[in-house]
Amino acid sequence: MAQRTVLVLLLDGVQSLDVTGPVEVFAGAEKHTPGSYRIRTATLDGGLTLLGRIAGDDVARTVQLGTEYDPQPPYDAGSPEKAPAHLVAAMRDSSRFSLEQAGPPRVRSSRSGGDRAPGRR
Image 1: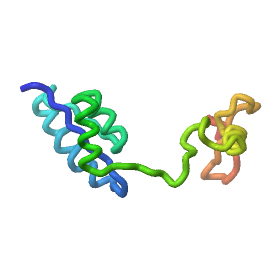
Image 2: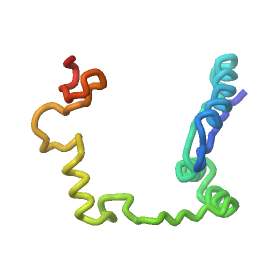
Image 3: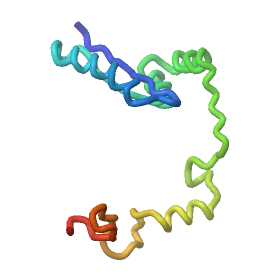
Image 4: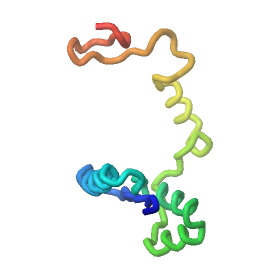
């Protein structure tokens, strides 16, 4: 039997049990017949992208049209190029991954309630 790709599409409002049930079924089948299933999860955007790569752009566009998926987010700030400069600067300044940050990153200890360096108790 040829390997089949199973795509579990994650839509708005999805809950963990909506996903784990189907994934576990195919994972179990994969254990009994190794190489039979490849399991993937994706959001609608990711699913359309993957579908376009597998079946072609026209198939992906047809699915998008059939589902009437026409996202119109309330804000257009999904990348540094589109977001207002002051928000990009504020986000970079507050990021724990900032290269300008001196010293090791600090994490909050749940036991003492205070900050500590990673790896120290």
